[in-house]
Length: 310
Image (cartoon, rainbow, N blue to C red):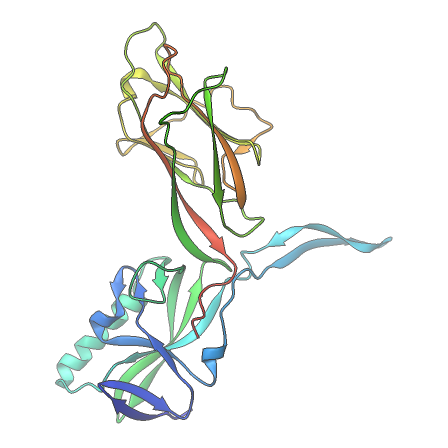
């Protein structure tokens, strides 16, 4: 398709097709820093890129007319779409500077090592993709490159949104097991497990004859749990537990988990769409209550339908 440029207020609109353009952020860099925007054509403003596609995992038996259902496979249906990334105005710099400009742009867009965050705005307050950008072809006007047609390939069928929940122990009372119950509601794709990163710092534990104290969180609504025993001398440190990759660090040092008597019938701790009734152990080895300087969880929710972006 051939587009004819029309320049209004320094912006180029390509005549012959409907367009929508916007700045975007990729790998922490604002596209406006390069004078770039993202454009779509041919009635695209009425189209939304929705997430959540999947393939069914099923099997068949010759004597059974019904399929045997095992579940949904989301990883085989990543969200992806084509887009044109355009300069806001025709380049008027020297050939050398112009060539160097596109070299920098190409390094940024196509040189990323792995999936990076992609926002459809130049602010980080929106849903995002975790994607790679794949070059398809260069776009030219008057013999000079004005843009690039690309494929934006997400690592899943979902959009994402980062969130945080905080546990405030002010005014709480532990039950007979030394636990405090919190109810936390999250809004995510219904059947997808949301594995949070747990951040906490216990109060400094001293005295007593026991060398360890128990850190434990239990989600009553999905029967998932995390527990580990922490040495008293490690208590006054910043702990980070990654429930997806099963790692635990103290002051950025990787530690081995002492799982104690974790129930084998329970899942590894995760959050679910809707209500999450979470019990948190708040007793140290001396029976003292609420031994936390802070406790919070970072999590990324999964969104089936992203913003209307094209």
